[in-house]
Length: 299
Image (tube, rainbow, N blue to C red; front, top):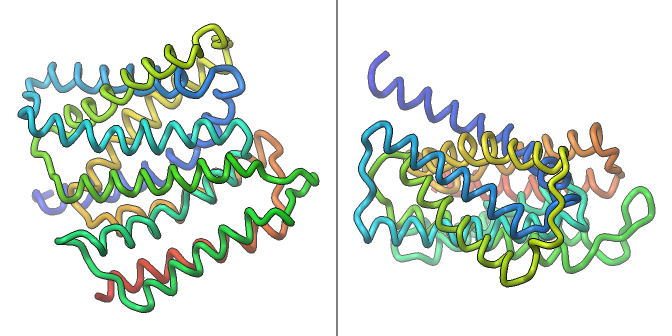
């Protein structure tokens, strides 16, 4: 297998990892926040995942990036994990895991619109902007105050706002990563992007007095370990690898698959309801994302 074929195989493997593994992380987060407060739960995940990735890089003999590179990696990590992921964890205290993943599916909409306004970004066509409006229309269908879940309970407005903000911050970090590429080992770079936010999140948990509320049950610890090994070490490094080799809009198409995996697992394992409104909203959101992606690939 030549170098080009190896890279293509790794891209496919990384993409499948992000699609399937990250789809299952919403379930693990939902289980984990039942036992551990959001900041300490997310902080421990990224602290240990980042430390493990840096240790692996050290064993391989890979050097740390220069100071400027560490700065850019830290900025990306803060947007993605302190901003984006913490808000997802916090929101899942009140929002079912499958619906959380469905709202996060708007990430490609934010990424495409943000990238179009950057100096070296790809501009959106009229069709692309129509797709963005359709996608956000699907979110409105899902979260409208008049709409309830199958069991009659309405969605928490603050949780919805948190998920939309998380999508925006994750998109900002992803586009920033595209325009501030840092050379080096993918595990070392991912380690920095995880460890710095992990430390910040643990500090936040101390400042917000979360530690006395933490209960390290078997379910909570298993959820945390799953997120450390699969969600971060494997999933996150796969996402970073994708961003280094494909355009952000293409990399973000994992958002098509994540909600399907998350909704299915939430329904099977946690008995989360799926009603007609959820299905319609999912089709509209993902349809909008598909229109945006198609318009960008054509241009």
